[in-house]
Length: 82
Image 1: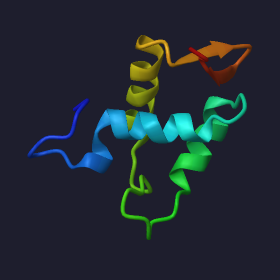
Image 2 (image 1 turned 30 degrees about the vertical axis):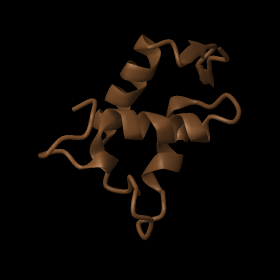
Image 3 (image 1 turned 90 degrees about the horizontal axis):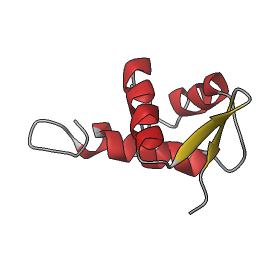
Image 4 (image 1 turned 90 degrees about the vertical axis):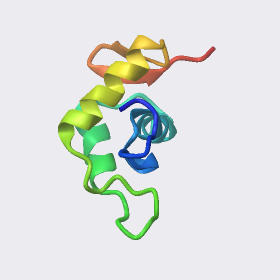
């Protein structure tokens, strides 16, 4: 679930989705704004998450929060700078 495996393609692993979330966090964003960006990604790209469910999106946010990659301040998600 976190890493790709024989039964889970790379573009569905939580680390891959989390990496795409971090790429889109160039500035603080709301959860709904970030979800809109991810859900409207280009379906022609090989690593597209256009069929990503909201549940997997939230799980990827949970993973990123757990490893201190993101924070939630004032209703906005921001990247943690190491």
